[in-house]
Length: 101
Image (tube, rainbow, N blue to C red):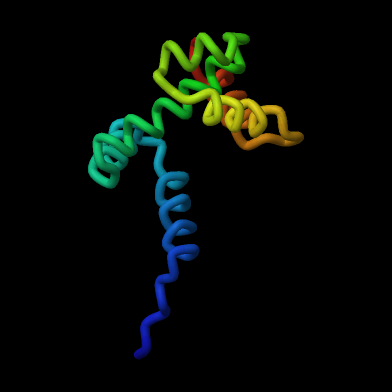
């Protein structure tokens, strides 16, 4: 029996499906910390923090100072957040709906 090739795109889809299939927050956190390097975790969390701070109305300059990010990265995050039907905006909405902010 021939195995299907696991292309990067298919592997990404499987990864998304695996994360979406669990509601175990601790497992997801442990999995991401196992999958990613400390640097990658730090970068990922900074990007989430920057869109949350933009959503809260903080200025780009203050975000740059607080998170140690370039204005270029922050501008990119801001543009993504402003897009119609933005994935960032939808994820922030889901987060706000399911947590006490």
